Image 1 (cartoon, helix red, strand yellow):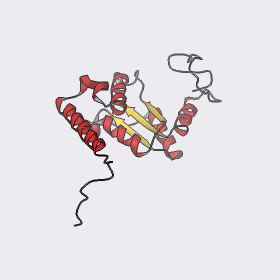
Image 2 (cartoon, rainbow, N blue to C red):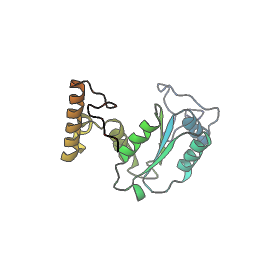
Image 3 (cartoon, rainbow, N blue to C red):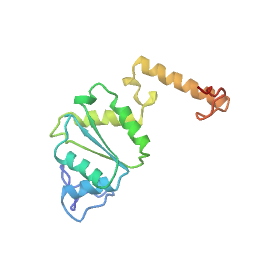
Image 4 (spheres, rainbow, N blue to C red):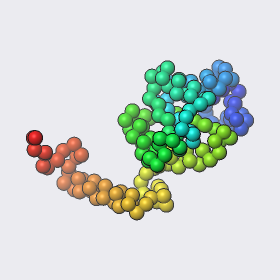
Length: 168
């Protein structure tokens, strides 16, 4: 966080144990957030990245950190962005995720959308988001649980199978 505990809403209260950068510069805070995380997700409503979000991606490249841009509009429209994010996190074994992107004041509605996407990526089980699941999604979850229960019952791990595939 910038020196002086600066934020758009005023100083950040001391109860949040965050490290201040030596400078009050937001770009330094942005770079440190990228550097100190395992990977970064940049959320924007617009399909193109500009301003601080573009700087964030540049810092990820500089520090050779994995980064994904998740957009509400454009090429990703209609795709399951929560699952894209979940795959990104699993693929790169991310333990500390830097969440970046546009401000609510710049792209109204982004806060609620980002919260839904993060919830979908981290809490996709039926009991965490039951109101947003379609009947097809509930059926897929039920089938997945049944398969997992059968595997446990016969002590089969996903990497083993009672009937290995025949060679071609």
